[in-house]
Length: 310
Image 1 (tube, rainbow, N blue to C red):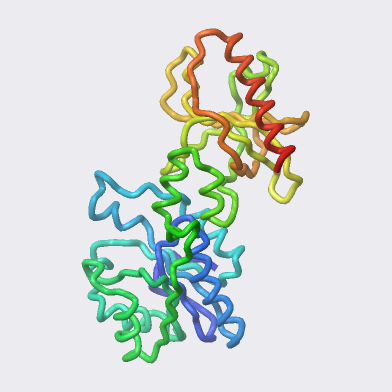
Image 2 (cartoon, one colour):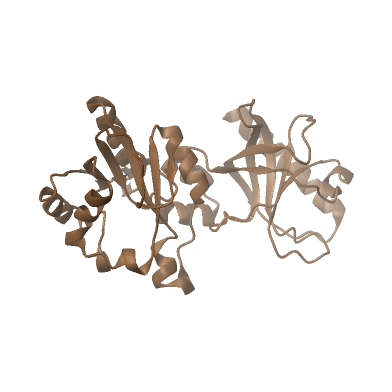
């Protein structure tokens, strides 16, 4: 179940174990918090929920340099449901909501969620007006409302805490394997194939094309990826994501062009899942289509070599 706000909810009359946070990307650290709520709910016969927020608070307080999200809200809700969360509440982050004093926040939740039993957060959780509240204060303020608080320690990878900020930096640098390790799953998206110019087919490398422009764009370049129809078999592929500088017409929005390593009948209109696995090279400009064709052949060889070793 998904809800657009904390108001007018209709939840089952069972103890609610609520994970609270932005949870952008739902990485391994986020999953530890959420899975704790899921485990406790199952053990006690309750339900597990997630309270997240939209848009990101930075869009309210510093719109000129707002944080670019890893995952749109709709994808986050789907992912959370797949984890085992029973309800997702996507609270609009307004100035009124941001003005709630930290000491009043647990009572605010309890008033709107009468079955709330426990709150689950990361140890670096901040809340309340001016982000003045921390995990220790959440325990103190929640006790007065009869609520328990579970705070999870930050998970580290290679000695450094996992964070959405760290993952954004990896994607911007083309470090897709590192980003996937921090996420705990392969970065990707689901989208519909759109018609293209057929240039790839003319060059001997037909592509499936996607108009995909996330807030946080991965580094423009060539990747080893895999694709499938939802619930179908994974197919290995090589993909170019970027502005196609070798094509003469001006391009303002990035295009993802996916060339499958085996023949396919998939075409425009197909809805496919795409997972990014390995960065091969940055996007380049070729003045000659012959040079471009030769490079695409090398990219295909590079992707095939990656999948042989994977």
